[in-house]
Length: 392
Image 1 (cartoon, rainbow, N blue to C red):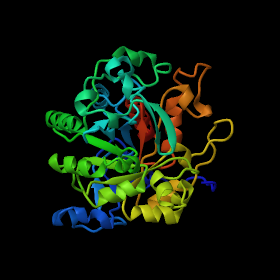
Image 2 (image 1 turned 180 degrees about the horizontal axis):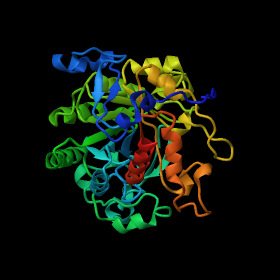
Image 3 (image 1 turned 135 degrees about the horizontal axis):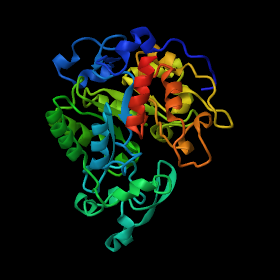
Image 4 (image 1 turned 90 degrees about the vertical axis):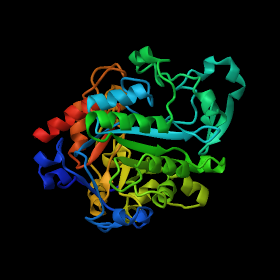
């Protein structure tokens, strides 16, 4: 978006700070016509506007990005467990398929950087070059491995130069299946006496559907098996492809969020179908209204909330928060990290790009726009920042 304006009163201003943060305040999420996937009792209560979904989550919601990827190798049970122990309100999983159709948790199907696959001579011939969503990649890919083969690998830190301490845990955990995560969440929920919330992304759904490895149907099957397919289930679905969210809306009633990249980008399913719209079109009121017809929220990159100037410093907020809230959409932008290299220039401290900057200051700037939650690699920092914001 190029239009910028100072943000008006955020949702927590209207609710009252005491009820909005770190309490039991529920997020109201608009429903959509595709909720017909639910049964009759799930469909009662109306859709859209101020009706439909209610999520029992604090505002701002702290989402553990790939678990606690600031402290443990991402998308491992160790990363998820630490996020839960730290108090993250929701824990994220990204899903890709194996050759034999199992859903596993990896940020990408290219597992070169996140596993020790290169150290396995038995898989040296699997290294190949592929074009995924228009990008040429060389490495090893989950769709070329059976689950049994993938289970012989071990996870490792993706960016060891930045997060050297995380390499201590290289090799400690295997690649989890999504079903194993569902089972873990059920066990932990039973022990704690409250459900463990999950935030689940379909990765490259058009690409995988073209390989005969569609993600939505096996995902919906698992959600039904573990009773997370309902409107009030403690799980949120997300995808960068609106078509994947629309497909899921026809399969389950679980809440859904459309992820949005940079303003000039186009969802890959738009590229393949010839839809000319860009993200800049989707964040306009008419685009938001369209997404609200099948989703309950959006997950924009933080730059769509507050753009940066040429020096990397924050400028004035856009109207996206106000415009999305006007359509009944919740906003969960991504991603806050503590390291200088990931922070806006305003909040960097010192010259070491891997050292921590003023993450608390950056959180306050984003929370002040009225967002409903945020993805963070460091949930403990995010939770403290949310408490600070509530106290103001």
